[in-house]
Length: 199
Ligand code: GAR
Image 1 (cartoon, protein in one colour):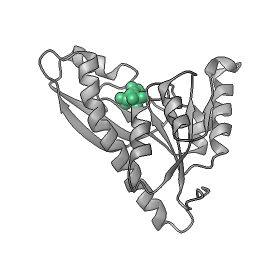
Image 2 (image 1 turned 90 degrees about the vertical axis):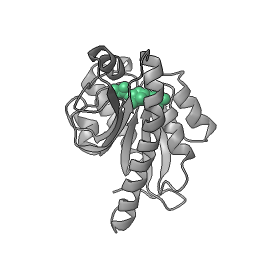
Image 3 (image 1 turned 120 degrees about the vertical axis):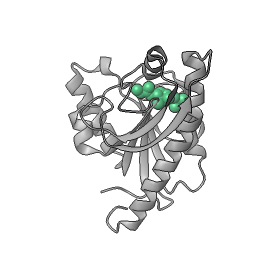
Image 4 (image 1 turned 180 degrees about the vertical axis):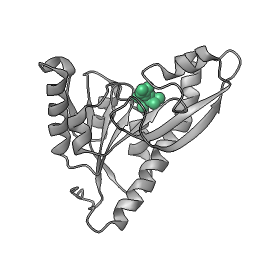
């Protein structure tokens, strides 16, 4: 199933599209119980990839535009991921909908900046503000074929303050989101250790 890392822990692959602060939280977390064995992205030149490079972690870029169709991109990404034999794939700010090849071959955890099932999609913070909610937050969930519809693993709540902008609210959400993601991955990894055939 999964290949243990040289340290004897299960490996995870993290997918990013932007600044990668959630990735950084995983890299910095003590006692995570697993190792980030690779970081993948759908675009070049992002801070998330630079964070991985600074940490000495292999990176790869799989761009939709480099493939004849979305289905081909999905297959290419699935093959890239399979090479690392991750226990799970963590989508941490990866701004693409994953396809059936990736989801058929891997268990994928996503982190989302809203309290699902409210405000799925790419503009969750903007949509929550526009709706006028007084409380929003973040959600960690298993990824299924829908858009942010999979089973919820954990959530954290954040109050919307007077004068919040999309940026200010998102930054406060991300503070809790990083802790949530680390807690979720740590709890999952503790379970893998207990499974004799998971390592
Ligand atoms: C996070 O808030 C994550 O939930 C969000 O992008 C941010 C990435 O931050 N993802 C989505 O909106 C996906 N729909 P980071 O690059 O600093 O980790």
